[in-house]
Length: 289
Length: 277
Image 1 (cartoon, chains in turn orange, brown):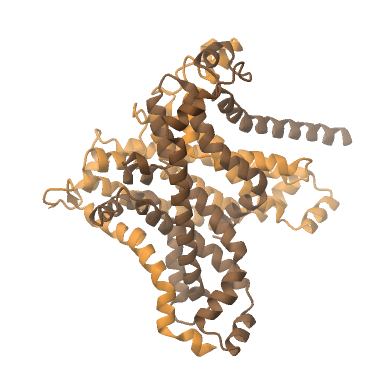
Image 2: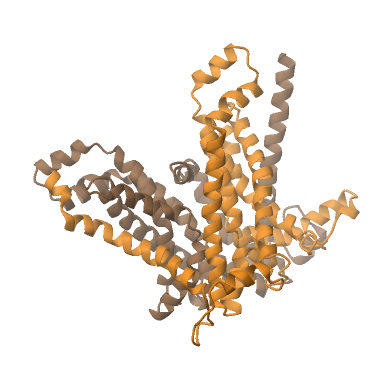
């Protein structure tokens, strides 16, 4: 058995397809992007080495607006962590209390996760439509005409981009947190209840500490998801460009302006940011223990 | 005390029902306007069921919008991606959990980097490579990157399941004279069905909804996938809402229909895909 399982040739054959696929499509491109980010290249003519000039331009040029794009995605991350996650947690805690119709609630809340972001974006384009969209129609019907507005204009753009994202992903975070809430051993709960703890005390002192690892995962997903968000912004603001995030800028610089070096620079920064934030969040959660 | 908790329960139920309506209403509204004329959508009948059920919106979405074709394309890409991801992941997981060699822990960690790498950032190198290989505007232009990006999650889930298969099974198969391949194909793979379902569902949804690669790697309309097709159609029908609604419903409802029957399994796949990491 040991001999059978230590055969080097077998090991290689089992691993080779995964290594080729993984390195070819994920790892090598990161290296290639890092390399290309040091050049000025339009994809056709000669590449010219520019060192870190792309990085410098990216952070200093107002016309590119990378810093603004980055702030937009960070703001989306903040909104996700401080609005979306608490809502998801509240739903998960409520459903964790053996409520009637628990499964139905859960399944409906999770449903939007399965709908493609393009569909949700298109749907919200209709919902937000200034004249006929259901949102303004409803506001006017309630006599709140002064609240009705062009939801997708520059002033309201970020909030209007966040709402459909929230709508889509609350259910996802709720599901993860709910799985955690359900895994709390009943004895722990009962013991606390016997000691006279109220519902909110049980949640505060038993459930939350228990599901902390899952909260950490949720926070990481919410933050990295915001940093790499593309679909919703693209669908809602493809024409107006009222909001850019790093990924929409990257696509524009790569495929509309053919500035491969600059596009690659944005790609590299996105990887660094995603890994950086994932590590930072893990460290913060460790610190608290 | 009792009154208090009853009040709390009512408050919780109200909240839960409210959020359920928030989830359902946009989908309901989408369905109703997919069957209405602009006249009804724009004022006569904004939120009710259609007075006149305008099925011609669906004919437009299917004929002019080619939603059927895009649906098929998405299905082909998704199926191929799932098969490749599973095959590659099962092979790799066998080497990572069963076979005996030094760096297997390190390599496992290496694969897990794939969970954090955002799919978007590899787009240019992958694009250039596909162009050189003349694979742009083929299904492969999507199948290969989608498989690569599903791989980390697939290996993660498969590792969990494969570790639970008792090693005594390998031993007895070995004594019976099975080769490594015999053990893999006849003993291990048949026992991996739950992992296959989990990975399949998760991978399916990832590539079914992907927009960026599909938009850039495929410019031939005959090969477009659903998200790109929906996006395209909304550009064609800027003023007429009905056909857009119909396309949105066609892209969404088959999935929701499957979800009604497989909700538990689908939810479990998402939990497994996230929490085991």
